[in-house]
Length: 275
Image (cartoon, rainbow, N blue to C red):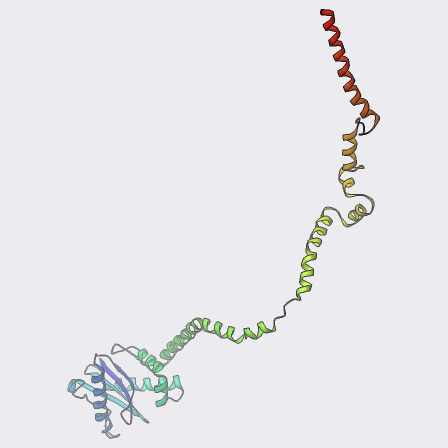
C-alpha cells in the first residue's frame, strides 16, 4: 500500500504532495523535509529505493524515487508493494504529465496543481494502484475535461449575459433614440377618431354607396324610407287638428261656452214647470 506521494525540487520545495494516511500540517512538512534530506544525499549511481525515515514508518516502509531534471518523485510504500512496479508507476505518472502539459516542467505543477492531482487520482486512489495504462488514463482525462468545459459554459451563461448587456452601451442608445414630433403626434391622435368613424361607415356601407348617400339622400331618409322621420312625425301629430289662431280653434271654444249657456236655460225652465 502507498502511504504518501511527494514531489519536490532540488531545493526541497514541495510541488505536489498526497498523503493517504492522516498527518497534521506540521507533521507533513517535517516528513517532506526529512525525505528530501534522505533522497538528495544519494548519488545518482545507487539504487532508487531506501528505507523510510523515522517520521514515516522507519524500516517498515520504503522510499522509492526517481529524479527528473529539477524534480524528485518519491513514493512511500509498505513491504507489500514491488519496488520495480512502483518505479514503472512513477514512469507512467511522469509520461502522463508530459502528455497533458506537453513537455512538463516544474512551473506546470505550480500553476496547474489541480490537473496534476487529477492525473495522480487516475493512477492511485486511497493508496491503491488503479490504472497503469497511459492510454486509458489520457482517455478518461479527456472525457473529464470535456465535461468540465460543458459545465463551465452553463455556469458562465449569466456572466456572459451580463457582459453582453454591458457591451450594448444602453446610455448611448437611449441618448440616440429619436422621439416622434409631439405636434405631429397630437394631430395624428386627433384625426384618429375621425378615421375610426370613417372605417366603420365604410364597413357598413361600401365606399360607392356611402358617397351616394352623402350626395343624393339625407341620413334620416336612408333609414326611414322616402320621407324623413321629422316630417312623418309632424304630419301624424297634426293630422285633423286645427292650427292655433285659426277659425276652427275659435269655433271649438265658442261651442264649449255656448253649450253651457243652453244647459243653464233648460234647467231654469224645468224649475218653473215644477212650480
